[in-house]
Every structure is written in C-alpha cells, then in structure tokens.
Length: 443
Image (cartoon, rainbow, N blue to C red; front, side, top):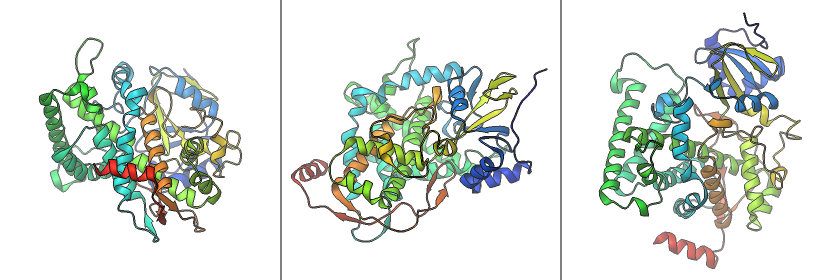
C-alpha cells in the first residue's frame, strides 16, 4: 500500500468550495495560502479532490514530469473547443498535433504577421474618443479578434464578417460553460449548451467554406495565414489534417490569442495610467526592451488565467513534499507564484525594470502555463501585445490617473479589469512616419 502524504485544506462541502472559487478566485486562493501555507488540498464538483501548489521547485518538477505520469488536466477547454483541440489531446496524439502546429509561430512566419497587427490596431484606434474616459477592453477585443481572423483564419469578405459577428458570442458562452457539467439531454436553443452547439455548427459551416475557397483558389504556397499552412501540413505518415481537426485547432488558436491577449492589453492600460514614471519612459521613445519588460510585468502582476493543472496517472507519485494517488488533479496557482517575494522582490509593486535585463524564468513566470503544454501561441500573443502597445503610445498620449486600482472581474475563464481598463487619450501630432503608416492602412 502506498502511504499518501497531502497538505490540509478546507473541509467545507465541494459545491460551496466551487462557488467560492468561481466568484472569489483571487481572494479565495490568498486566504487559503494564509491559513494552510503554499500548498493545500481542495474538493470541488469539477476536479474532485485536488492539490493546489505554488512552490517554485514543485511547479518546476510538475512541468518537467513525463506526460505518461502527469498529463492533461480533466475536464479542460477541449470540451468546448472540440476533440481535436490541443487542449483535449494528451500523450502521443498531443505531441503529434503540436509538432505540426509549431512552425507558424516562429521565425519568418511570425514576423509576417506584424503588418496585419499594426493595420488592425490603427483601424480601431481611428474610432477612439479624445479627452473623455472610455473602457479600452471592447476595443482590444475587436483588435485581437480581427488579427486572429486575418492572420490565423485567413478570412476575408463574407466569412470574415460572419466570424466577427459569431465568435465573440461563442467565446463568451464557451468560457462560461467550460467547467460546467455537460447535460445528457440537448434542449436546443432553450438551453445554454444547446445554443452553444447551434453556434458551433454554424462555425463549422463557415470553416468548410474557407477551406473550399482556399483549395479552389490553389494559392496556398503564396499565403501566410495559418489555415493555409494547416492545409499543407502533413503528419509523419504523409496524411493531412482532417477538416474537423483544422476547425478545432483554429478555435484553439483563437482562444489562446484573442480574449486573453485583449484582457492583458486592457490591464496594461490600467497599470500604466497608475504608474506615470513608467508611462513617461515608454512614451518618450521607442524603447523596445522596456516595452517588452512592461508586458511581462503586466502578465506577472495581473495574470488573466488563475490556474493551470495536470492529472496524475501513476499511483504514489512523489511531488516535492507530497505523495499523490493516481487520478488526483494538481493545480498550479499562477497568482501565488507570481507574488512570491523570494522570486520577485517586493512582488506587489509594478516594476517593469525587473525584466529589462533579465528574461523571466518560464517555470516561475507562467501566464502561458508550462512544460509540454505551454501555450503554443505565446510568441504570437506577446508580439501582438507589443505591436498594439507600441502603436498606442506612438499615436496617443495616455493620460495618467490617481484613481484606485480597478478591481478584478471574473469572466469565467479569464479575469479582467472591473471597469474595462479605463483610459483618457489625446491624439499626438502626426509625424511623417505616422502619416506613411496611415496611408498604407487606408490602402
């Protein structure tokens, strides 16, 4: 018999723990840390008995553990993204799909998307009001969605318009349903899951049209979008991706690069307005290192996703101080490790300069998860945020504020600024470079 060793945790009924975790995710995890330490057990209807960890060494060990022993947490986003999504896959099938999808997110391919990112950003900024407060979150959502539709889906014309109307509603509903039980009866449009499935069928039909158009035009070699690359990709045995898997992976990339990226950009606005010294330094010139460090620090201090996890596949697995049973879920608290003062001195202080000359340790700074399941689109998302922030600071003066920090607001999967990342902006005097860019956008 294996002798289990687990830390203590709350003993309230699972349903109460789940409601508290969903409605007060940050307050709950901090209170449990204060009471039980940097690791504690929980019990919920979603994951059952689980271990929450925030110790750096234990997180590193978990992320480096062979997927045969600690693999994909269940349930996960695969239940809303589809069976072919990277979120749903595990083991060899996950490695097989991931290998196929890595090339578009590196090197020349990644650089090819920068012009699309700036063009869509400028289009949206053209509608921004001046000298009055407004929430930036809706704008950031439109920017990141348009970028994904063009750079990833390769959508234009009617398909672009249909997806732009459909996907925000689908993402919002899916994020609310992701961790809820799937009903055994489909009540159609009279139930949330029924409406979700209706939207999914409409989405699949649009993707089939995009695929048919791409194959009919026969210009895949000349296209840079990721849909075209998926249609050309081949597994080791020479077989292509199925249309269903392509549709699922497009949704996976949308999830990785749309709402979470937009939310982080809204948090960036919220943080910079309350730190005028950093804002002044960023606005005084094109300091790429400081801008990239600012994005890293926003993700550290305002992580959009609360947790990532693994499911233990072997009995008696030793994780640091603990001995775990087969089937147990291990959750990693992103918020708690990001606020660990031994890793990040004065952790509650917003200080991008801590990352100007030091890249973050990817087992301690984990807004994209870690190990073999780290977000495939992390480089795409960081480039996207860099381009949007660079363009914002070049085109506008962002007015500082002495208002209190915006509260955290749970959107289901993501946590956003409670007031939407309020901003007051003033258009900068147009420069020759800005005029040239605007002309290119108009074309």
